[in-house]
Length: 336
Figure 1 (spheres, rainbow, N blue to C red):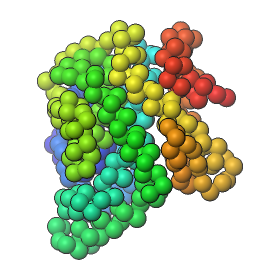
Figure 2: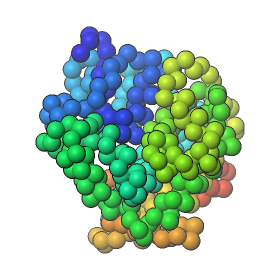
Figure 3: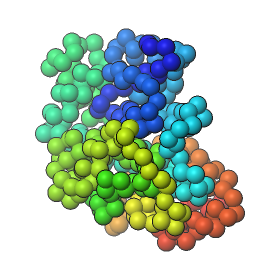
């Protein structure tokens, strides 16, 4: 690798890889984009979990997990930060990034692997970049191996017939939250993008590519489709953070409502089920059921969100109470 540059190893099929790629471009941090190959997978297999993307630092070390990487890059590079300066707004940024990373991936995975049209479209190009099989790259055998492996993971992510109506409803509500507010220079918390914007870009960009969610986005949210495409490379974007009151309204408040009505109740139910050792989490949101096996990692997600909330100053918590109360988030975050 070139001295002084990072190397981002991933796949264009990964919402997390393109999230970090867009963030690096916006921050003008020198890096090279490399598709994950079998040999690179071997070099990075010591990472736990062994997922993509992987960021190779200028010293040659490999590190993973996009949120951790984003904050480490904040410490290493001061210019063009993606973390709002206001502590209350920064907390909401963290919460909405988590909502994108941990929930929006569920409708993405459902749409990607439910319908034969989507399966065929995605598996043809994604298998070349992301396959772990020993088959020849681009071969029909590799494509089919990749398709079967991804479909086998659907129950783990809750992408089942029982959950399909809620996942589809959540996608529509996400599009409705974005569409009235996005624009050429309009992001979640200002005229400059935040870490949460890049997390949403990652998920929405994949759904703007896959056939079924792409059609829905272009029908329901054409401005969101354009916004997503532009954020892929925002290296030329300058801007400022909104004042607190403006930053906590509009698009941020619309997404907080989804967090308060759907995501946080799911995290709480998941944590309770995991603690009790039960085999099935069951919730009902917007009159629709959702059920799956408890997931340990998302217990950690809830703990981290609550720890960040508890660490806020009294002034920041007071500032957040109205919007978090209106959107249903406060009760889940302030719980002991």
